[in-house]
Amino acid sequence: MSVTLRQRKKNGKISLYLDYYNKGKRKFDYLGLYLTPEPCTKLERATNKQTLDLANKIRAKSLLEFENERFGFKTAERADSRFLLYFEMLTEKRQESKGNYGNWLSSLAYLKKWEYSDVSFSDIDNIWLEDLKHYFVHEAKTKQGRSLSQNTCVSYFNKVLATLKQAVKDGIIERNPAVNVTGIKEAESQREFLTLEELKRAVNAKCDVEIVKTAFLFSALTGLRYSDIEKMTWSEIQHSKDNGYYIRFRQKKTKGQETLPIPEDAIKLIGKRGEANDKVFQGLTYSEYNNAKIREWMIRAGVEKHITFHCARHTYATLQLTLGTDIYTVSKLLGHKNLKTTQVYAKIIDGKKKEAANRIKLDL
Image (cartoon, rainbow, N blue to C red; front, side, top):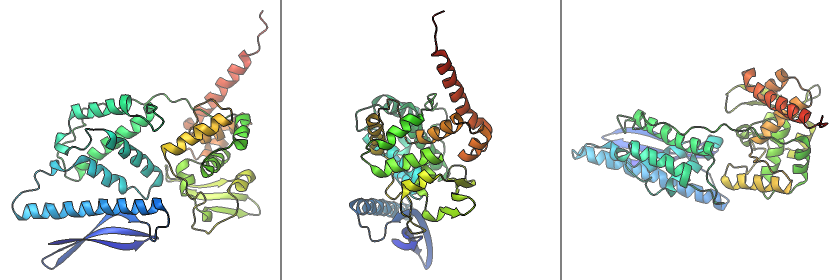
């Protein structure tokens, strides 16, 4: 039997697949891994090399499994497969879903830093999983030396749980070792947002990564999520005499088809129109580095709150309600399927009104 790694052009990228040939029969297995054709940048070349290395590892593993079975060594223990390699394979399969891919990539990076991560599936038990939880919550540090936020720990640990579930589906393990393990509890997150005055200061403050600043402000003006902004192409931005500028797109999170009006300021932000299939925000990526640059930008703008990219969407919602837009309209603009989701923002506004009312004191 032969197992050959082959390439095929698909949707502007190069798809990698395995070509199995045995006794006159052929079978193809698409890996969900993609190369960038004619890479121009150092990052693209490095990513291509990493993807090819992973594909070759998968090919070698497939060939080894066949040889083991051929000589009577049942792939015994499939549970001896390496957890980290499998996690890496699942991560690369998510390249097409950029928003989600960034999260998996970050999770993988932190896993690789943990000294006990490169184990076989048969070594994973309750103790290993509890140790991993402890690592995420108490030991893992960002490049700036800070601990991970509670909800980041939740996200990363959930990726591990999802990997174990998938391993059961793929027949690598018979029983999920995480069945009796309690996940990391989400922190009650405070929905931080910018006031109109703070947003204006942010417009005039310098951000070291211009594309991040532009995308953040675009989100604050439209309410769009990062995942929808990152994948947005020029063809989605349309104009009509009656409706002005609007974007027609499918939400990445809810899969719902949406038509959203775009204010003139948002159009000014993005500048000259590109080719129909080009991304509007080329070069925008999710990374801890960019998150840090947002925090530095806010400090320059005199904003002391902990602001992340998603706070731009919170800003849009709270400003709309503050300026008098009714909650039903705001719910539609945000693409919420349930009005209760939008009511969270209304409660924030009510709380701010109460704070403002209590500032007037006469010392009676």
